[in-house]
Length: 147
Length: 119
Image 1: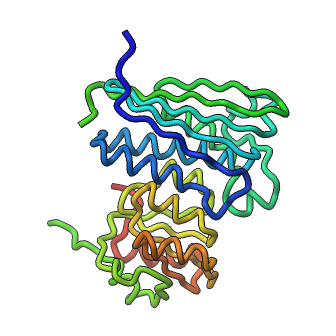
Image 2: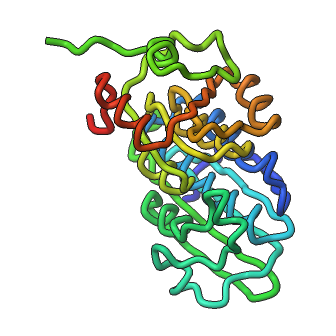
């Protein structure tokens, strides 16, 4: 039986928009706090959403995050239209990054984004097509810790 | 014995920090400290209530501080935050301060005054 959706929302992300980068993640965090999700889970989701959102801003033309809250889990999907990832194994390696020098100087592109997402997720799925884009599917189990 | 709580206003005074925005939030207590310029590192390792010391001044630092519920940000080396950064931080009530000191000196002074990275 598929569990009922408690809440769902879409957040659009614009590639290259450094001024508003992070705002969707802040909204997601506020929503989860408001629903009464456990503080530790909100903290993990905030890291995941931020890293995923920044990846879209840094490497894609545009994309979106989709937040689904179920009674027993939170599902976060991120899809972008962008350059895609050529070698996912390499992209998952801590410290590996294709970021430009300019982006690194801003403190991004440390090669920690995807590893940080995986570390904080219970389920982590990534698919990517070079020249098309990347899709992430993240699940965090609530284990009754949904306030 | 319980340690005395240090507030943002205390360190502003002690270390001659310039307050760039959110002057009304300076009575916040500092629970710890984190220093770093890599945003993913700060996202991964800073803790709620930390004062964050960095040289970054672009608007994205505000999102990081809000997401991690940090007490405030100190930008070092006499660097100035961008106007957009100040605007965003002011809207969120997040204090941003600046110091002419290099990171090593400022972190050392904060540590000496009782702010620790571990807890």
